[in-house]
Length: 301
Image 1 (tube, helix red, strand yellow):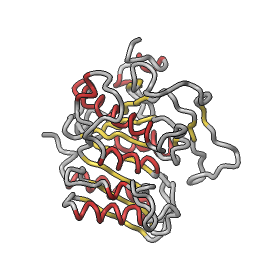
Image 2 (cartoon, helix red, strand yellow; image 1 turned 90 degrees about the vertical axis):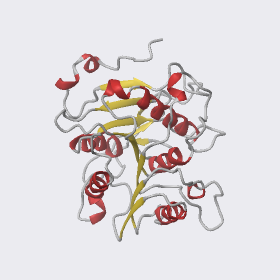
Image 3 (tube, rainbow, N blue to C red; image 1 turned 60 degrees about the horizontal axis):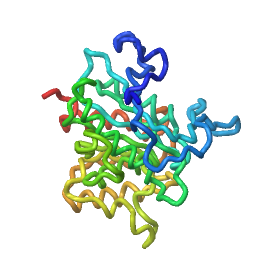
Image 4 (cartoon, rainbow, N blue to C red; image 1 turned 135 degrees about the vertical axis):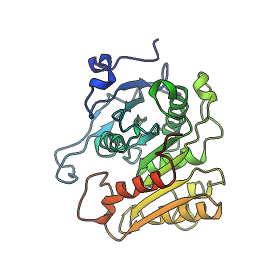
């Protein structure tokens, strides 16, 4: 089976002729079935219903039943390209993926600041009998290894590969930032011999990072170590997912001397993605761009 699969006629077009909304390449994550997949979850499809809430007056693609994960590579214009790349992890409670709100739109924004966006379509919903992030973390670890393996081909610097996630995707990004030393699946090929540690992480309204009270002994704020990558965190104080997620995770980063930037805003709720409102929290992309520049991630060697 050919690992690099054609996913539509657009993939045959040269990168330079693609619009900003089209990926330069779509890559299947696994050369065969993903670990443990039995193909019995139903057809992959947008599960958005007419009654579902709009964000900034627009609908959201809620992609469900993902069993064949992929990477979609979005390249910036050559004159903007910094050589940095970011793995983008949409949220959706490990039930669905907010594929445009927290995926394709984010890749387009990354392109605007000279960063290659690599959209991870990871497996959802959570598999029966497994932890909520088991399949997704396997996909994320595999994705970082593939990004490093194909860095030269994609024109990116393997020492400047970050991860950016929202809500459950923020949890997945934090999991990748704290559980990268050992693959959580049997080794497939040479890509799995390369590091799957992100060089930096951006967590936007992340979920599940800390437990309530003494609950959730597996919370990721308890897994932070000195080798956790530098991290940017942003959240609204009135977020129903609980602002304690970023507060406790930041405290763990501080205790282990990991550089971080924390932005907490009084209002904004949850699930706004890149769609701007009057709430200052939706200006988080500006703050992230400032942080990336100040930390040197957008500078060519």
